[in-house]
Amino acid sequence: DAMVIQNPRYQVTQFGKPVTLSCSQTLNHNVMYWYQQKSSQAPKLLFHYYDKDFNNEADTPDNFQSRRPNTSFCFLDIRSPGLGDAAMYLCATSGPTGSGELFFGEGSRLTVL
Amino acid sequence: KQEVTQIPAALSVPEGENLVLNCSFTDSAIYNLQWFRQDPGKGLTSLLLIQSSQREQTSGRLNASLDKSSGRSTLYIAASQPGDSATYLCAAHDQGGKLIFGQGTELSVKP
Image 1 (cartoon, chains in turn purple, brown):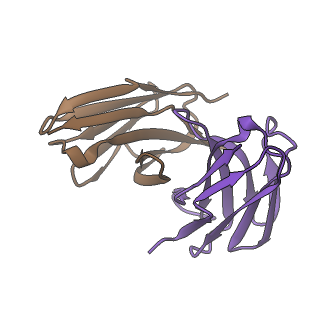
Image 2 (tube, one colour):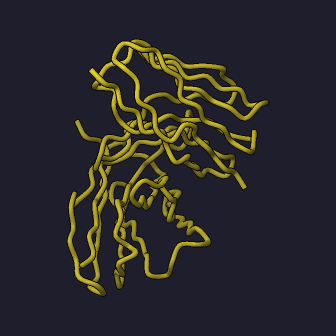
């Protein structure tokens, strides 16, 4: 059973048209992450939430925003997608104590036309 | 700043071979190290997690080792199968809570 679910799996948008990607989890983990992965590259951390505390990476463009309305859900908003934002977006979760293991969803593939 | 490197970038082996994938990291102050598998167009599947206090972890045909002093981890795959073909990523979890990834090793196991 999927524990980290991302929707949609595939998203096509036009240059400049806002996009929202969603992530939900059934693990009750308090930490949620958003990563961007471009073709043949390592995943790059955009931001993460520790409970409701938002932590933005210094080099994450302002074009990327995130919301976490409750423990189970987290959203990635791309306000004005450019061609360079075409990528796989990966959501992950981890628990508050113990191993620190991260669990990933299947990803959302964004295409910008 | 933590940097993670994986060598080789790609590897092709015949079915049945044992193989080793390498991962190195620059900062030994890690919380743990995690190995993932990624199939084309898919998300990451966690394979093994090694805590900083551990030396190795095993799951089935997979064995991962960790040597913090030398900044290295290896993933050993025994008796490789075509179904093992995928990209394998290692990631170091630093003390600040961030997971830093290597670029991955693309493995192809030929029947």
